[in-house]
View 1 (cartoon, each protein chain N blue to C red):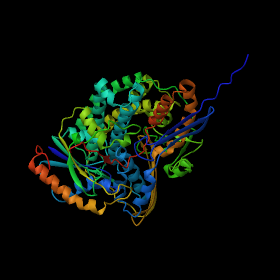
View 2: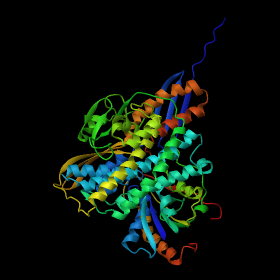
View 3: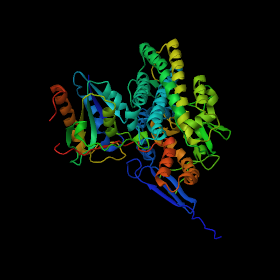
View 4: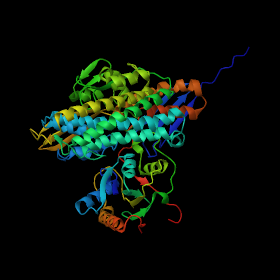
Length: 155
Length: 441
C-alpha cells in the first residue's frame, strides 16, 4: 500500500499546503491502491505511518529558496542533514528529524517528498495565491507518480 | 597574615534559538558577584493569537481548529474545546462518550510521556547529547520506546478513527466507533505491553536525577471518581478546590517585562502544573500498579524536586495502561453502540473546558452567540509553568555554581535539563522543513 501523507498546520498560512493537497485529493479522486492521510503536525507519528506502508509520499511546505508555489520532488538522501534533533521540546520534531529517524531505525520504506515552496508561514488560516495555484498541480503530480509506479523516479 | 578576599563568581548565560526557532525558548541567566540578577526562560505563546482566529466560527468548527494547535496534545485541546462548547450550549454527553474520551485521553497521555521520558530526559540522564547515540548504544531501549509509542498512537486511532488530529470527536459525541474486535485486540496489546512498562520502570530506576528541591504550589484537576485527566475541579496543594469556571481566579495572569507570555500565580508567587502536580495532589487514586511503580522509583508525595516530573510521567503511564484495560472491559461489557451526538440545548452561552494535558492543566473558554464564537480564551500548561520555571532556575543556579563554577557549559546544560523536565510546549504550531540540497541535485 502506498501512503500519501499531507503534513503541516492549516492554521499557519502556507504551512498548511500539505493538508490542502490531501483535502483536494479527497474531494477529487484518490488514486487506486493509495491511502491518503492528513498527518497534520504529529511529529514522530509519521515514523509509524511510513513504517507501515510499502512506499510513502510526503507532501509538505518546504523552504527551498525558490519562487512561492514551486513544486519539487526529492528523496531524503537528496538533502543535507544537519544532524540536529529535537533538543529542548518534542514539539519541534519536524519533518527533517522524522527523516533522520527512519534512517536511524533502519526503516527501509522508500520515501519521496513533494515539496511546495511557501510564500508566508504565519498564524492565520488560508494559503497565499501562488501556493493555492500549486495545490491542483501537486495533486496531478501525485496521480502521475503513483500511476507510473513508485519504482520510477519522478521527474 | 594577609587575608585574600575571594572574588564572588559571576556568570552570564544567554542561549538564543534553543529550539532552532528565532525568538522561541531563550534561556537567560545573569549572576553578578554571586547574586542571581536574572533567571528567565522565554517563550512566545501561539494560542494567544489563536484566540482571535476562532472568533466568528461555528460551534461545529472550533474543536477541529483547536486540534491543530498542537500535534502532540491534539486530543487534549480537542477535549478542552469540546467541554467548553458543551457546557456553553447545554450538551450533556452520554456515559459511553465519556468512557471513549477517557480511553483516547489515556492514549495521548501515555504516548506523550513515553516520548518525553525516553527521548528528552533519558539521554540527558545517561549523559548523551541526544537520543541519537542511544540508537547505537542502547538499540533495545530505543526500539522499546518506539514500540510503546506505537501502541498508544494506535490506541488513539482505534477510538478516534485516525491518528493525529482527532476528527471523530464532536460536540455531544463521536462520529466513529471502535469495533469489539478492535477493542479486544487493543486490550491484548496493552496487557502485553506491561513487560515494556516494567523495563521502563527499571530503566528509570537507573537514571541519576539531580538533587534539587524547592517548595511550591502544585495545581491540577481533581475528580472524586478517578485520577483526574479528562475532567474535574481545580485543586491546589495549598488545600483549596474550585470549579473550572473560576479558572481566572486560579491563573491570575500577569504581564512580566521580559516575556511576551503571561505568567500565572495563585496562592504563592508561582505554581507548577503537570505530572508531578497531579501525583502530589491525587496519588491515592492511582491504579495500585502505578502506586507500586511510584514506590519502586522512590516517588512519594509531597515531592518538590521538579526533575521527578519524569518519574511521575512513568508512574502515570503505568496508570494509563491499567486504567485503559479496565475501560475497555467496561466498554466490552456494555457494548459500544453507534450513538448520535447529543444536539445543543441552546445556541447562546458561556462555557469553560478544563483538562489535564500531558504537561498540565489546560483551559479553553468560549462565549457563543447564535451558535458562533464571539469570545475565546485558551491558557496552556506551559504558560502556567513559566513563573515556576523561572523560580526554579533562580534557586538551582547558585547550587550549580557552588559545584561546577567556572564550568559554564555544565551549568548551562543542567539548567536546560531543568527546563526539559517540564517539557515546555514551545513551537507546536510550526514545523516547516528547511532544506539545502546536495550539490548536483
